[in-house]
Length: 337
Image (cartoon, rainbow, N blue to C red):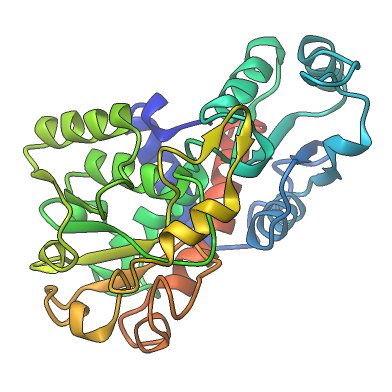
């Protein structure tokens, strides 16, 4: 599970259906991963990701082992050590699954994180699950559509209905901020939202365009599902008629130079656009839209407190759904459920 675009719509439906059942009957699957271990490679730290994967493994009867690659003898471009082929082959003898988290500041160029995951997938005989990398965040994308479909149906206390997403408008809008964030979460949201028939609008200031290939895939997904796709550089136009508003900062295409991530320059550049904040005035232009974000939120920059903590914010429900979709992925891959 490196990108949801790699999976068929039917396979994604199976994950979401099982996640919904696991959410409603949380502790009835406690032996699926009995005597099984899930290795977790954290090149980058996390809050929700580590917590949710460890809880998921425990509730399925398995064990999640936290690993820091910097404490291991792994080969890099600058240091000698064990190759991916050797590490993957050996770990496949020990564990039943491997998760990898590697984001923008741990790579020297966009795409290197995904390349690493696919290299592990090439040599491993166990499932490889992205816990967020520089291009995609599949578990977050699944948690997103699960949460949106709950809210756009009867509410998070009821089973989700994926059909309620079709024809709804998803606005993915850039937010200014003091963090230089990767494209992974927003790109995954665009891809999976368009797979489920949502109209997708991407809004950002000039100079903050996303991956052209992902934009093309999103447009193709929309065309296949008879949905609309558009991009805009206007700060408010995209809000009009939106059912789901996803306001999050992301880095520019110029974030890397000579193998270095230019974080401070990215922050300085982003703070020049304070008008790109999701606030109640902009949300009033939407179609009673819900606010969504993968967290952590840069409050006061990406979104106002009034919106993030308001009655139409689904952020905590989406965060909870990370646990349920990850349990479903682990059950369907590691346990063969």
